[in-house]
Length: 210
Ligand SMILES: NC(=O)c1ccc[n+]([C@@H]2O[C@H](COP(=O)([O-])OP(=O)(O)OC[C@H]3O[C@@H](n4cnc5c(N)ncnc54)[C@H](OP(=O)(O)O)[C@@H]3O)[C@@H](O)[C@H]2O)c1
Image (cartoon, rainbow, N blue to C red; front, side):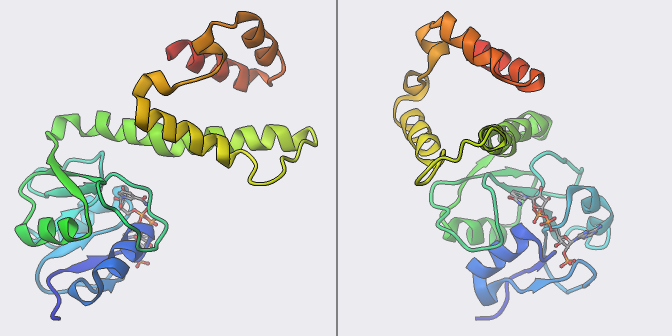
């Protein structure tokens, strides 16, 4: 199969997508200057300068950044450099994304939708809350226990995290459990008092938001 477009940037997103697309989309360092259509898989801060080298023939992957005249296709996932099953994963399109790029993402199972450029920062903040911030909470919770010598057996906190995601996907807000949902104020006060101050504020603030 001949290549349809090139991917620039061999980071987590570039490697994962290149691995899934195979020969239709060769993976190149960001310093390469290939002919034809280019997908920029570089840090957001590098997109504007690199896009200027491919006027009218590049697409970037940043969910937050909007550049006039440079279309974007943002996969709403967390890449680790490996190909995965992305069926049903939203793909936010902004600007005039070429048909070849749309088709390539659709072939991997992504579900495209049009996102107005002015809503990109809000959309991306929601993505950060769902992914990076959730990761910070889970890793932080594990560290708090470890620091006090509590090492959970088996798969640790993961079964709880997985059950929570499963319940939310199935039941929406009705799938949320815990003392804030039940209104168990004495439990909330006791648990909050056991936490270091920064975590206590987060614990109470997030709990009251729900
Ligand atoms: N990671 C995700 O889960 C994810 C999800 C959705 C969207 N995105 C978007 O995808 C894009 C890439 O993210 P990433 O997580 O793959 O980044 P990354 O893992 O940090 O890799 C980016 C790659 O860009 C190149 N690069 C590094 N510094 C550069 C610079 N100063 N100028 C130009 N190129 C540079 C490097 O590749 P070479 O050594 O090959 O040049 C590097 O491996 C970003 O716009 C991000 O918002 C990421």
